[in-house]
Length: 262
Image 1 (cartoon, rainbow, N blue to C red):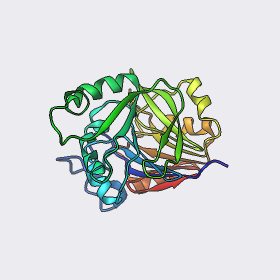
Image 2 (cartoon, rainbow, N blue to C red; image 1 turned 180 degrees about the horizontal axis):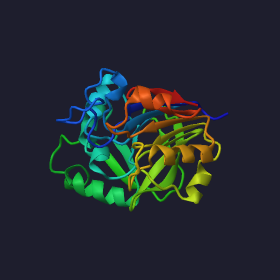
Image 3 (tube, rainbow, N blue to C red; image 1 turned 90 degrees about the vertical axis):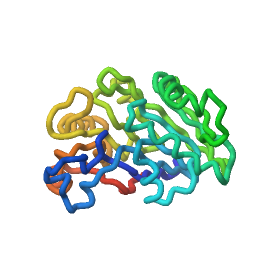
Image 4 (cartoon, helix red, strand yellow; image 1 turned 120 degrees about the vertical axis):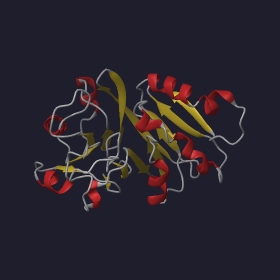
């Protein structure tokens, strides 16, 4: 039997976060805590292995809120600012354990992140930087090990597209996470066969050129036939209570701090 997968959704909002600076729309002024959405990120825990997906500008606050004490590896979905710029906030995880934290990314993302954070990966002139290694993925499944127990978790990259940008989603057992995408090739849909819990990009009701709309994401959910689908990366045009109630059976809107798993 596969190990149980637990996913804490650290952030479920789009690149601006919600409330949006300077906006007085109903969602940005909402008193419903589910309408406050930090930038997308997730913590995946499998058999004692703790894996961070993306490290955006809100990662420090997310880690404090969820009392995250250990990160064994980081998986990047792509190189956009709201998914990588919090990388330096991984430094405190090295204070107790000096072993480097491996980071994995699609090839283009690996190149961009290495350039953005050259002072971490290439410079070597400052001794206080985060102790990280960076690896380009080729789409082959791989294993991540716990730095404490040695237990391992199997990770299956899921190639997809975010407009013209190649991205990776990731599968862990019967759980899959795909944010920032508007096209999943048939070959990647095959990799999602048997998924029970699908965490999926769904920006808003209206069409967008690089993200799934609600209707498009619902169609992906139907094709995958997951028991549960949770939408993430939503904008401030989406009021949680109203839109969640309107979703079809098995499809829900996620919110910051939600824990799901299979």
